[in-house]
Length: 597
Ligand SMILES: Nc1ncnc2c1ncn2[C@@H]1O[C@H](COP(=O)(O)OP(=O)(O)OP(=O)(O)O)[C@@H](O)[C@H]1O
Image (cartoon, rainbow, N blue to C red; front, side):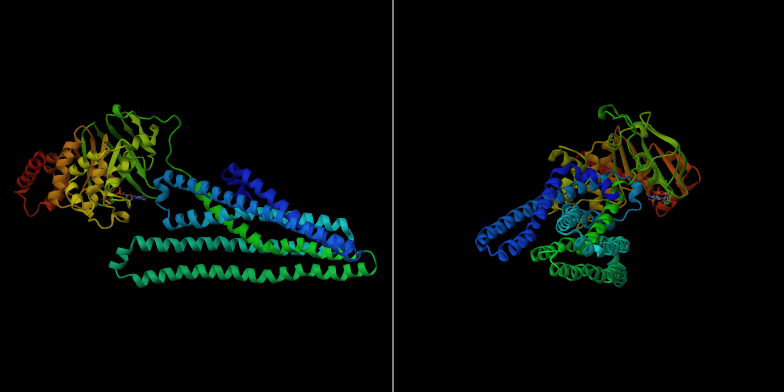
């Protein structure tokens, strides 16, 4: 029950519904006990006593009891249904909320399919149990208690003899629970593996098709599907093994009752009506015992689901606000970023950044260059506090970013990443994603600066065109331009361009950069790029290798000394060594002219 104790916060607020549901079910159960008594009265006091004038009243009583019991069951269903749905609603929101605040570290390992199955199938199992399963288990206990009390009041010796099988039944049921619970836990895990396979396959369908890996994917799915099937069969086997035993043990009680009760009637120690009443009451005890397997099954399934949901809810949030975190005032932020001897490594990995320092004064442009895996993106991740540094510190306007309110820090930074994520919404909404209350003019201005306006206007519904999931239907460069517009509209103090123009051609890159130039004025900018052309105007270019700074300086300084930068420069401009500056100058001038127009 520990799982449900931990989930208490989610259903306790709905306790009124829980209590009404339980009270109604208790009344319905108690009313059910009136039938055997009416039966006893019918046989002993009406049929044997030949008082047939009582039959209409008796019939009316039965109708009354049935109607009342029906109403109680209706109310129980109504309240139970509401309760289950409200609890599922509360839990679903809490899980989604948690997902929003879990840190990058969590998502480095999380599987989307698994999370989806926690938020759907697992929540459904909990909804069913809290809405109905719990009340039914309680009902089972009540039926046994009421039934036993009633039987004891009629003939206690016969009751004890008849119920001798109950401990055996309870023992079998408990063993069943012990065996079936791990099976259900495995089943949930297998289900989440299946969901993950489907989700990854759909997300990566282009990769699958372009590598003609459909047969491999089919096999992979079929192995997981087989695992799920094996789990199901395993659970069915446990079920098949225990149920006949429980059925056998349960059916021994009526047999004992018939033999012993019959003898009592013959000996005159029990009336016929009492035996008949006993016979109906015994099902009040055996019936619930019979269903004990089903209820245990229901309970264990929801317990396994509850564990998975709680695992998500209890997940540690690595990055969180410090006590009294400082909230920045937008108009007072200058954008002075300093990395002071930062060394950082991802969990269980070698350092991705070693003793890294940079002093980015407000409005300066810092360029980061280096081979893949050299630590460039890590600099940005740390600046955005996707991960916390443990050695060294990063400051914004002199304040350690770990002391800043997370939302306040991130709202000062507008990133454009190499991979653009677009939501399946209109282009307008995608551009306006990071800001509240934005006008159409602002959206268009940002799109024009990002050189996205023209192609957007060529789309069937212009800014209202709804892009497919993850921006399907747009080219890589077009998606990147939308992402740039999204960053520009945020009007940030710090602009981060992480290989942001990698998917556009040279000329568009220069056009966008001309847009940036206007926009970067007064903002601190970090540019990560593989192309020298994207970095050459930076105030400081830092060259990284395996997390170490191997060179730093301006473009002119770096091309005047041998090293990685000069090598890269030579490779990129190998075919036009003398004309590079002229070509660059030409393009920039052309672009600036166009922007000015
Ligand atoms: N989320 C992560 N979890 C674990 N290790 C990571 C993570 N992200 C990056 N790394 C590792 O940290 C090192 C630096 O990676 P980083 O992404 O900063 O390189 P990069 O220079 O930006 O590369 P690229 O140019 O390919 O984007 C690499 O060895 C990489 O494997």
